[in-house]
Image (tube, rainbow, N blue to C red):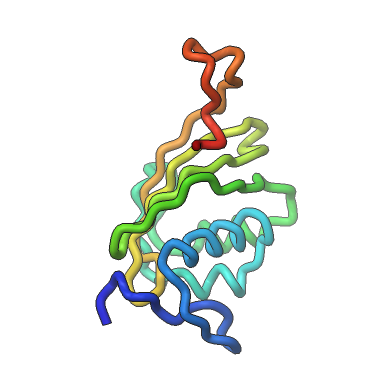
Length: 140
């Protein structure tokens, strides 16, 4: 099976075939909207490589985020693209440290798990305040 083939992932009690794109979207929902550690961990490789300079490698920071009882950001997915073992998702984070942020998250998968993550993020500017009048999100 190649890295781009649909791979089993999901809850330990119910294995299903899921594309890497669907896995990335499920992962983002589990982490930011559901704050569901059990589901989120089904998508993580234990030694995940992180390219966000504010975050360490591995999963401890994600476990701490999900376990934090304080309200955190919510997530809304926009465009999602898959190319082999890479998935890119354009999305909106609401209440990211009090701001609304638009981001592109890039995930590399191996065997149905996120093994590497990159992101770029900027504060959302309303269309009526943008020089071009175009919204940053949702992307169409």
